[in-house]
Every structure is written in structure tokens, then in C-alpha cells.
Image 1: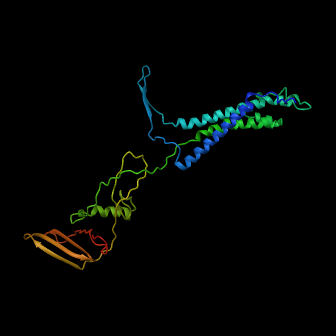
Image 2: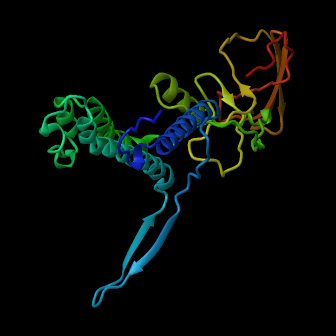
Image 3: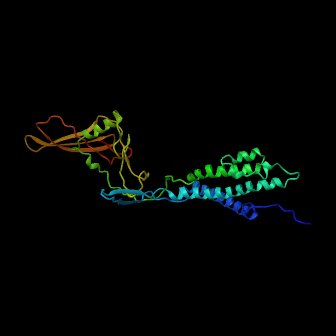
Amino acid sequence: MPRKSSGWLSDAIRWQSLLLFATLDIVLLITIIVLTVISSTENGFATINSPNITSNGSIVLPGKKSINFNVSWDLGVLWTTLPNFVFALFGAYWAWIAGAISDRQPYVELRKRGGCEARTSILLDYRVFPVFWRWWAAFRKSHGTVGATTLLSVLLSYVVAPFAARLFATHVVMVSETLPVAYNVTFDGNNINAEIDWRPVLDTVAATLLYQGNNIPWTDDQHAFRPFATDSRLTTGADMAANTTSYAAYVNCELAQDYTIVLDPEDSGSGTVAVTGTDRGCEFKQDFGVTSSQKIYFKTTAQIDCSSRAYYSRL
């Protein structure tokens, strides 16, 4: 029994070409799915250096001063042009198939039983129609295969391919990393003594709490934190977290009832006053010099080694 002929076939619509196109489709789809999964679980699939790489140079024109220019090469050429190029090739391959189908359509009409009209066969040439509405002419002639393939070719070439430039994009992600931390400041309770000037402290408190000013570094509305430093090569905007010590106090003033004041005169006009006592279980002591020319003194005593039952410290 003789084998039935399918007529003339272009290389684009032979089974070898169609099988290759289907394979490329599957590979492209799998690649996009895999990269999407990796990107969503691993904060992307490639690391891009953040510093810009530039090329400096100059142009000297006849009779003119040299013109300096700075060309930036950090343009993301690879991840913007490569997807666009791949989809452009994909669209060109599909356009080759769609063109072969439209060129074969007159021969398909001639093989119909009972014949066909000349305008749909020997007088038909889809190449005379602009590609943008060639699909519309095919649908009007009831050539659904030609219309569908041509419409998909237009969409791939002029819609999908341009948007492929955004298939890959750079984003800043947070990556956790352990870094050495240096504590370069130590709290010294001895600095809170009778010689401290409380005016800057009270001015800062008034500015932040009363007038809603910004907190000074390493403080919030209640705590002062021990400062720390780490590697200065960190990317700008990186967040750092470290265990540190916070210092805080609260106001609970009471007049001391258990105290002793002893004056040790040095000469007729000056001396030393020693104040000792206990405030709710915390002992305190303060020595300061006095003179006969000053009648009122405001001094500060700090104790930071009180027991937990006595709430640790006194000021």
C-alpha cells in the first residue's frame, strides 16, 4: 500500500526541527523554574559586587583642552542582555516556523477535495501583509493555524522579548555573618563623683525628653548602651547586632535619715567634710573640700556596688 504523502514541507516544520524547538522550550522552562526556586530560597543565585568599576580617561581634540570622562562598566550587561538575547533567538526560531506554515498554506488549499478559490491558494502570499496584522488576515481567511502561529510570533518578538530584560535583576539582601566585635569604651563608676558637672547631662535630658529631640548615640529614652565597633569594610546600610551592656536608672528620691557629717578643718578658712550614711540598705560616702566663703554645696555621690536587695546602686 503506497504511503500517503503530506506534500511539500519546509525544513522549519519537519519533525526534526519541531523536536529541537520543543526540547529548547522544555530546557528554557526548566531553567527559569530552577532559578526562580533557588532565588526564593537562597536570596538569589549569584553574588554581584556592589562597588562600581569605572574606567577613567581623556580625549584630546585639536586646538581644545583635554576632556576627562568616566565610563561606568557596572551596568548589569550580562543579566539584562542575556535573557533578552535568548528570548530573541526563541522568537526568531518561532517566526521561522510560523513563516514556513504561512508559506505552505496555499499548497494545503490546493490539496483540498473539490478545489479552492484562487485568492486562498495560488494568489495567496502572506508575505505581502505586514507582520503586525498578518494574523488578522489569516483568521479572516479561516486559516486558524497560520493566524495563531503568526500572532504568537508577534507577541514573542515585541512583547515577551523586551520584558525578558527584567527576568534577572539585582536586589540588596540581608546575609547573616559572624564578625569580631571590639568594645572600646568601658563604664567607670568613679567618673561620677563630686567633681562632675551635671549641667550638660541635664541639658541633654531636657532636649530629648522635654523637647522631643534626637537621642544621643548609643542611648534611647531610658538606657545607655556600651558602644562597640566592628570591621569598617562592611557594606553601607548593613545592620549589626551584638550583645552589650545597658545602663539605666530611675528616680526614687528620699531624704536620707541615717547619715553622719564630720568636718576636718585644715586651717581657719577651709577644711574637708566627710559624709557617710546608709540609704535603704546601701552605704554611701563622700569627701569634699569646703571654704568659709561658700555656704551652700551641691555634690554627687555614686555607689554602684550595692546589693540586689538594695537595688544595686545609688546616686
